[in-house]
Length: 152
Length: 260
Image (cartoon, rainbow over all chains, first blue to last red; front, side, top):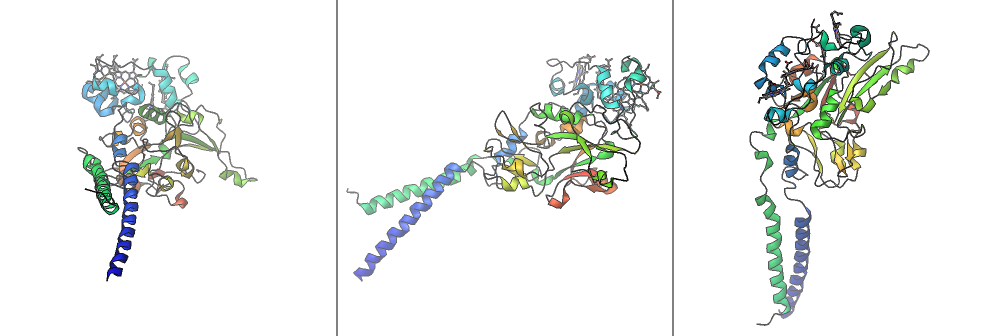
């Protein structure tokens, strides 16, 4: 009888040793694995919010139309209708949020027009293209075309 | 009271057990669930992109807008998206294999457009191919990350955890599309997020916003009213490197066989 109890004590110590090892593992794991890891998958779930947290630079055309409905309807009437305002005007989220704090500069037309309309073999054949030197002969594109409503 | 060995072991075990359990549980208490972020339910979206090669005019505004929106370093080899120009010389019946060897260029990633270099020879073929992360459903890059710092989000976007990335570059090598780079400022990996900060607020990506011909369009495959469903039916579409079974979600219409 006494003998078996002595054996049980050995076993008990062994179990304790294993438990201590397990605890050490859990402790190290808790310290090394970041908060939220494994919640949604094999990654830190907070990283999703980190990626969402960036500020906007481009407000999107819908925002511009709220205040510039005249320009928006002018644009919508011609073949530039599918072009976003900020394609030509550049990123203006700060201006759209507060037009007094961040003024919008008027872009120079000619380099913009040439970027999209200079003849290029790789461009789809249906896209309107010109050889700027022959076509405009040195004058600014906006002398004859209105940027928002380009048809002459 | 004397503390014998047995008692010491018992007490130590008890305290260890409690701290361990508490430490395990605390993160889940402290962390708010991002899935509950206001107005956006990740489970109800599955993002993809549609690219129409026949519509791309190579203006490069998408590349420029991406750099500005996402604060990407200016050099061309740090690009989340870029545009390639393919040129296949006029047919030469003595060398039919030339059909398979396009001349590809991408000056500054296409950011400032493409100066005409191939003087139109009759019979030549040339076109633009916009490229970006394919947001694969079975991404090789995610599989190789040793620390779980890059992942497929529940709404189908491959994202990077910049706080947790080691900068080991495994994923840069694993991506078959060359869509990743090491950000020299942080020495961690960076890539297209599909403008996650925009699409989760109801806006389109910066590249799609500025595209003048709708050659690139963002689509939500879980939204039954999204025009992308119609586009995917109306066109014959292909993904890049379908043989690699990456589950790529950038669908190209009008893709040429020469495109790698």
